[in-house]
Image (cartoon, rainbow, N blue to C red; front, side, top):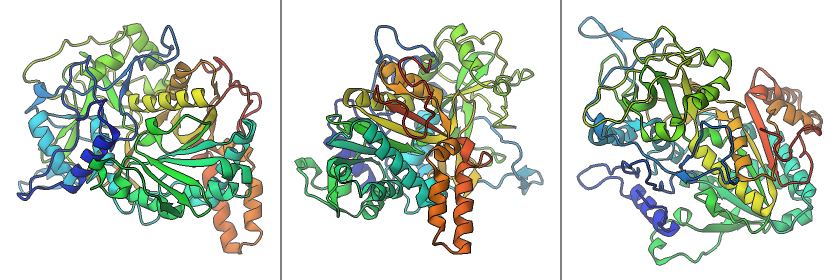
Length: 571
């Protein structure tokens, strides 16, 4: 693990060495960079392979801002002490999976494929116990050697999924229009920073710059900042934006690293725009107004899950699965006693926890009243059974079940997302500008939305760790609340569906213009793609759009003019 005071250069060097020396001569895998077991008051920092400062935020179950200021409270990193869970092995099944006959005449499950990352996880399970869901999530996506985003092909038809910018140029062009309009509303500042979080292959930024290239004052004042942790994707972004890298003043201990793996990576496009790559949001400068785009970024930031049981709220963990009936090599288990994250999140009074649960839709609050064995299912995860491991060794003090909340109710929380949002909101509050966040999710907490995608189809999140894309729905109400805690002056606008947002940006007119010189076949393809973006039964309602801006500029493009975006309009 790396402390919060470790220099970016040293973190980058250690990160790259963990990539380049994944195997010793004896073939033994190095353990991935994970934080050590910590007691509750202590803090640590994750490696730069994690997007942003992956930390917990104080009081995430509370909907009220912190007293005495708008900083949202203290932020800290916690990691579960797994020493009491070693050797705990129980069965967890997910109903509805296909079973086959075993040699003994019974039933068994054809397990999903083993992966190099799974081998690393098994070492952790054997020596340290289960992983929190957030740690499992982070390893699957961000492991520096075997993580999903280190793969060659992720996006597009040859990858596992297609994002909106990859579907049609219209999407990126309209976000370019939004960026230009918002920049103009802010007084056309120069210089300014255009930031994208998780830029993928660089398609969206390419379309935004192509849309803005006719506006000389925009091009002359802009500097691009890309927050990206995948070396593979950094290379793709460099190619897409036609960037020529420039020499940088690297520290002596970074000279053995590939250029794209260093702390400071910068270059210039063919049109003369400076481009900088960052490992974390924190290093994006706030010396000029910031205009930030985060498209399908927050859904890939790890989350925690908790389930209500007779012994209180228990955190969902991931452990090794040995039973022949387990469909995968890992399974869900419940922590037998309050974990540090349970205490940090839910260690408040029962009334506050009840109010938090009540913010979810009714169908998510019903749980499984007949369940008396810490097993439960929710409408979003039918038949999911989670068994608690047998506890061995020292234990914590259990929380009691909350009156009025049925057994089996599950909640999902994203503290790492909140820390990123806090950092972004404070930068905009200090420097001016705006942020546009587009992702799938709801404007309220949700119970169990973790999902996997592989080969353009849904897959179990437990299948083939490192080879399946993981994501979870975004709780926009939490992001709005954190932004308000970070600043009392920012304009924070009510969330709007993606379909309404694009229609407000006049996607219909742009579609007609693009179809003018297209063949009949091309016209049909364009129209079908646009319908996919705006239709309520496809992406138009599932995806939501959130905007925060500097004060005093009115509603940004795409949002209703009568939206209350000032002061405390979101509480």
